[in-house]
Amino acid sequence: MYLGWIDYGVLILLLIFSGSIGIYHGCVRSKQTSTKEFLIADGQMRVLPTAMSLLASLTSAASLLGVPVEIYYYGTMFVYCIISWFFATYLTMKFFIPKFHSIGSISVYAYLEQRFSLIMRIMVTCSFILVTILYMSVILYGPSLALSQVTGLNLWVAVGLCGVVCTIYTSIGGMKAVIWTDVIQASIMFLGLISTIIFGLIDAGGISKVYETVKNGNRLQLSVVTFDPSIRYTIWSVLIGSTFSSTANYACIQTQAQRYMCVKDTKSAQKVAWINYVMNVIMQMLCLCVGCLLYAKYSQCDPLRAKIISRPDQMYPLFVIETLGRFPGLTGLFIACILSATLSTFSSGVNSIATVILEDIYKRLSTKLEISNRQQVILSKVLSVLVGCLTVFMAFIVSYMKSSIATIILQIFGAFVAPILGVYLLGLLSSRVKSRSAIVAFFLCLIFQIFVLLGSIFTEKPPNKQGGRLPTSIAGCVPFANVTISTITKPNPSYHILMPLFSISPLWFIFNGTILTIVLAMIFTFILDSKDPKIINPSLLVSRDEIFSCFSSRKENIKRTETQKDGTTIEQEAML
Image (tube, rainbow, N blue to C red; front, side, top):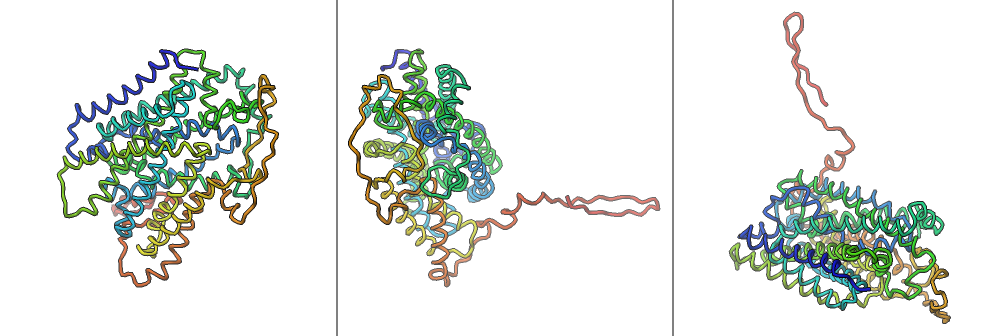
């Protein structure tokens, strides 16, 4: 199916509007004479647009295309993420944001230099750059795949178009352009999901019909409590694993944490975190509803097994074609929704990578070669262009990965971000751990996580190690005779000793890596840090009062003076 002129009009308007915002903020409204203005909007952004920008940067095409497919194959255990996101938001708001604002640096990795050393800061920065480029490559490829699926447009033309437009408005407009464009794009994402749900329900015959189909297909799952780590979604993997991964995403990744520096103070940044939580819950629950609609439509004819599509991520676009395609403009709105998710995440990633290269690497290693603020802004823009071009190139490599987008994101993110979260927790909670032990633990954990990542991607798993994927059917495909079913039985992959390790649910990746980093650091502390004379600044640690403040009421001393009948005065002090 090809798009109509109304659909193309919606897409062109989105791209023109995004580019116009970048040109307006970069060339008309602001002269951008300092890196602080270019990279964090001079710390003067309002709370609501910043929170919407944070939501848009977190909600990538991996979520919009991947979460519905996860519901289709694994059921509704995903809903417990609401609880884990709450804990992650609370931890970020309580412990991380105050430290970032007290340090006052544009880069959140400045904390690691003050707490540990410059080497630790640069190692974490390099890991962040690598994982963000890989991440952006995946989210750039995903929507381009959807775009080519419904328009017939060459896949790589779509990849290049998305990448070029986003690179242009990010490099010209800076953070202000990114945030205000994110506001529009987040609104389009909500509109696209809501439209899909409304017309999907009409096509399915109503809520009761969808509920009955999903229930009969065993997709309404809320009580998977097994301790098997290979099962994708269990109460434990979602509540524990997702809490760790969300905390790492909210607090330890410059892409998201940079938003907290765009507002004027700590209290405003904490409001940004909580507003983002509420909007994120709404967004992901809409994705869950779309997943239920996918199953209601394809419960008797799995399009992947029937070879109607070649990848799981094409299922949602196929649903849109068959459900919304007859309504002019709605298919274009869906593509605009996916495109918005891509542009917002891509622009945030490009901006944050330019930030850390300038702040954490160039400024810290080139202390003798000082350049003016104007030259720093120009350097930031050049870095943005180079990073954007590199990401477009990396998207070609991502196309050879056969897993779903959501799985790839979880695996890559977990491999590289786990040791970063581990180092931050060590820095905040333990005064015993010093630079040497933290560096060794970080490096060893990173090597181990990459090893598990490669094993998970390239090891073929037996049927009993498919992560609890629920059965699907092709009995209702019409015409059934045209569905080709292979009669060749593939031999089960041979079992080897590392198979259980490589079959672990991606939700456990960050938890395992974080705990490994902490344990290794505590062990090496006794070997490497016993004679380290460095005194840790108490302001860099989380105190016991901060940790347990949520369990005790706020105490204030209030003095009250009373005059007795005999004329004497009594001063009373009450603690509230």
